[in-house]
Image 1 (tube, rainbow, N blue to C red):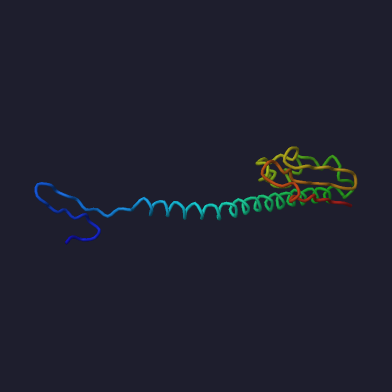
Image 2 (image 1 turned 45 degrees about the horizontal axis):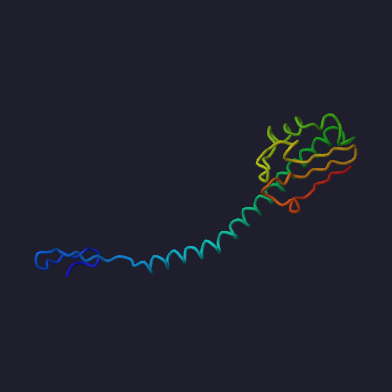
Length: 145
């Protein structure tokens, strides 16, 4: 008798028969069924956590932009949010040279990836929702005098 992991060759008459251990079709179907159930349970949870992380990152990045706007407001003497010194270029400079990427849209432009409204007394900032985020989960940040 041979080792169970290796096929055993036996000679019967003039023919050589090979006995092998293999999985049956039913065993393979059961494994595929179990994997399908695991994917059906895990995939919605994974997609939900990815969407949640996009929302949280977009919110954090918008707060960073709002902090830069507030810093520029203070640097310009706190007179008006729509002062000439509070521009896209100066906000970018205040953030270290680049606008944080909005994970909901994939871009990092103040004009397209964030809705920024500057008036004399308020600054309103909201990350754009894009196609991968819910607009209701993204806050509107309002800075006022």
